[in-house]
Length: 517
Image 1: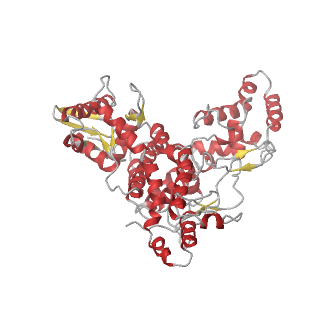
Image 2: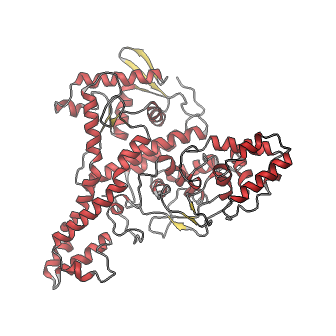
Image 3: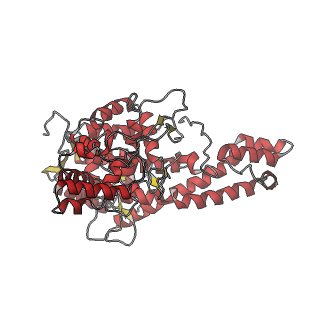
């Protein structure tokens, strides 16, 4: 059984149920690319011991994130730079006008004096082109998010910073909306994996090169780094070991070993991290709910004709969508099976003893405002039922949306050609899966078996044998679904057919230093 780490008190919540199951915290609005950005920020703060466990801290780590107010202001709170650059004014006049406009919107958090930019760029037009280049490679640059919650691509250490809310008076706070600690959990997962240190060294070498061209450009705009005032502890992750942690690490190492630029590899790491963390969410939910069967994701490879596989894929999606709520209910109700719950019947004040136990498990009921007497008079069933209702209501707001939000974000789910959401992986996700699984080339059926072993993906008749035996689908329909995937991968240049019965999935990047066969 996996070792469970004692949870610290979490003061930002009224009770801990989701946190006990998955950690503090997984969050639906922090999509996989934001998760990886937050993860890299934690890593950048621990380059002296990257992805190594920190001893004497209960399995957690500390980090001091960068804020880079100047860089993000120049990229995302600077709408007039283009019009000034395109004007026919002399260079000196362009600088003067831009300095005046930028000063009007400055937050006074180190962005009041921007004179250093004149020494970093030969001309104003060069400065404007640098902004255009970095902005064009950023995440969600065209979204309507606040400017302080937009992010440049992580080209290096100077391009990393945390999410912030900055009010009209320049007061800054990390309100945990888009950097909600999910990236901190990813860091903890990888630091607790068997090959975490190996991955940490690889990432430190590949992504934290201060002299990389694009990082130098970010540094020219930012100037000296800006940090949060004090180090802070990372979030809480319940398990010390989990096979999913090892799988995420193995996938990252596999992707980074391929013959492609580190920034291209990072895009695949983002997709694979999203898939693996979604599986962590579902696997943990099943285990807590008392279901030890592996997570199953029945995927339709989209075709024009409606098939039974499409229906099964929708059913699979809906089943997995309901797992988390089942886990919440089961976790709260499991306190009745705790030895101390039963032993409380023999003490003088059994209800008070059970209230004490519930506070230890869930930080609930509250102890302030004189509520003790109100709760201690309730029956055990009323206490449990009350917390189940509260926990499910809070769960539905964000954590309960993780499955739908993340599966859509990584390209795993779709409504295309159907009124129901079902699992229908995109070409982009399929390519990331091939890059992660296939070192050089792999027989197609072996690839399908490995995709099911790693990620629970059911595509062909061999992987869906349980469904065939249960008479939920004909073997021929799953075989056709398999053929549809093969055709898709052929079109993507990822499968080579040697004969009608022999096809190989080929990784176009193979291993560095090796040629693909």
